[in-house]
Length: 124
Image 1 (cartoon, rainbow, N blue to C red):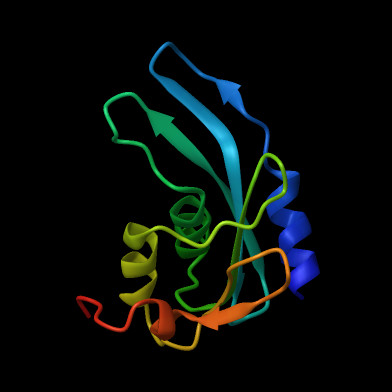
Image 2 (tube, rainbow, N blue to C red):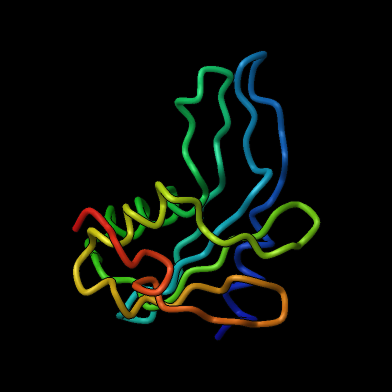
């Protein structure tokens, strides 16, 4: 499943300039819901830092479809490097239902880490 998610995340990476202040697609993410569905998203970067990470965009797509639990998440950059989620994404995921056991791919060697281990002192 790691490879399927990796490929899904990599498939949506298409860096592009949207305007003088916004670019997107430099990072792609894929989340596997507890129901077995895959949702993808890309980062949106803005000059004023109001953008959104690829992981949160993928999760937003999942929530839009009425799903609220993640089994696994993968994010990759334009070179195919796996990127662990930033602190904001980690906290966002921790506040979802039954999130402590969410598996996060953290490197290109296939290492999976539980979200609770990445966020031992979360707000939730």
